[in-house]
Length: 182
Ligand SMILES: [Zn+2]
Image 1 (cartoon, rainbow, N blue to C red):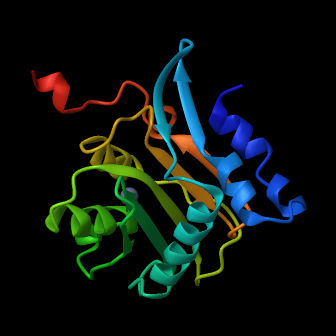
Image 2 (image 1 turned 180 degrees about the vertical axis):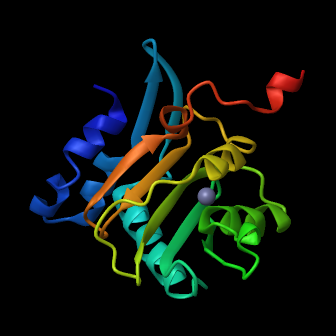
């Protein structure tokens, strides 16, 4: 079982704990590959995850989706813990529609950010979130450009307590990245 699986399976654990700071320490992710420590991120704690989901919900409220009525919000966190949010922005010329994840990514990159730890995504018809809203293939590829796929975390949420974590590598196996051009 990977550490992400462990977090998924135990995400309600800290509801039983009295002190949130203890939960946060326990919630730090340590990801390993073939027994070798490849990343230890203390950024994506349970309280950070909740905060990111909250920010994604706020961003969803700003979505412009008069055609699909499917509203999406995303919150992207940098390695130095700055959060950039985005919403989907539709267009009467449908092909110009922007996804929430790409909006957040473009906002961050245009501010000079290049290193990211995780993204939280929420979405639903008429802003009612009943299920996870996975990123489309285009957004997975857009994120792939700037992140280490094995350590970047995609948080899919229904509520602040009901979420699942995935590595980008799990969502975009054998993705094409900048190193393929070398
Ligand atoms: Zn997308």
